[in-house]
Amino acid sequence: MEQYETLKRLVADVDEDVKKAEGGNKAAGVRVRQAMQQIKDTAQAIRKGVLELRKDD
Image 1 (cartoon, one colour):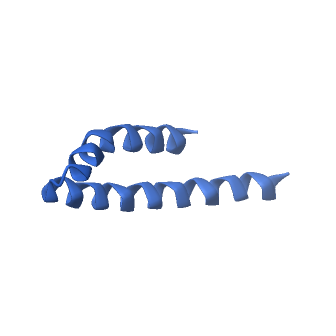
Image 2 (cartoon, rainbow, N blue to C red):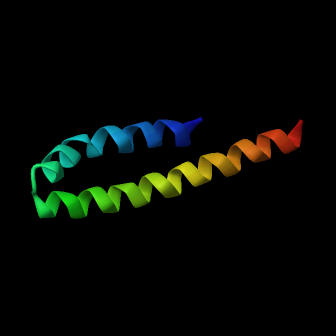
Image 3 (cartoon, rainbow, N blue to C red):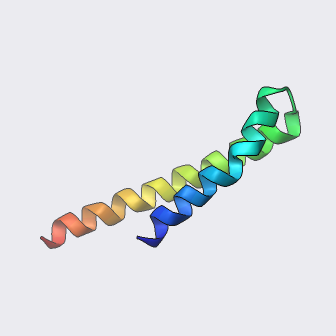
C-alpha cells in the first residue's frame, strides 16, 4: 500500500523537527504542526482504503 509508505516517510521526516520543537524552537514547532496535519490526512486516506478493501470481500 503506497499510502502507508508515504505515512512512514512523513513520520520519519518530522523526527528532527520534533526534537528541535521540544528544545524550544518555534519554527520547528510550526513545521511539526504542518507535518502532523499531513500525517492525519494520509492516515485518514489509509483508513478509507482499508474500508474499501473490506467492502470488496
